Image (tube, rainbow, N blue to C red; front, side, top):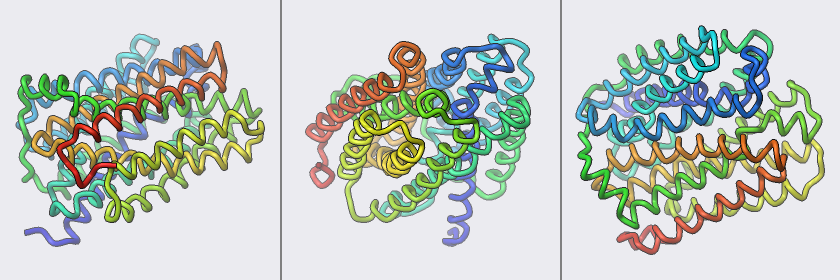
Length: 391
């Protein structure tokens, strides 16, 4: 029996893994210009590095659970971190754009082992009534990545170089693997996922609509977020320093949102939290489009944006566990796949829309995707066998 202090240390170690994965995955967003200079790429080509990562993750996450999901979850995380670190090292050494794309594919493969397992591993360490809080602690790494990691990665990319940035990410991934091996018990058994299980989950209206919420809300957020650096430069006449401030604002507010959802999770259903935060995001998209071209206004909107999104991320993970408890391993793997497919799709949409329609076009596309997320939310809530968790 592990003490509460030991469990807390284990959850924090898993949170560090989420931090490293998030920084490695999302640092491209704040580094589009340095990446473009280093390899002679356009912003759209840089954004496709996010797409390559996201689509690889989406395809690999469920398939890896079919092939290797029987491994203990701690071992899956360790393997994922090592592959992720190797991909970041390849990025740092990449001589050409094709090798750069290949490095992001390798990183996506490693993340496909990490992402689906962290929440399940964290929730297995506590009782059922504490799972919401445990997942929020694990996902705190994502918030801290927004607070410190992603703004710092942007600064490093501009000031030191993007190759140095990804070398540091590689070192962090291998160091985190050692931390996980030390602090997290190797007792949580994996769950081999049958192809028939994936097929059933992907063809049932209830489960597919649950995954649809994750996909569309993520695509909505990242359609705008992926181009935050060009938006600050082009629409608000900001500098590289202002890009770092924008990312820092998102991070500070994001940590606050994570702490907020830890408390809210004990009082409200995941459905209710998702509906509220999605509604706030939709309003913010309209407000950004109608508001002044002022960095102060942008930063104010980003505070609310980060608060809303950091309520969404753990709530949708918790919702999957609540709605699809009997398929937890497969469902979380597919959820992670849909989330990262949403990230990749959002980045691709941004790459297509921004050169044509600019910032207003991104907001319009984000709003449309959010509407689709709400539709999926209503369908899944209506079809859910859970009555206590309905809207």
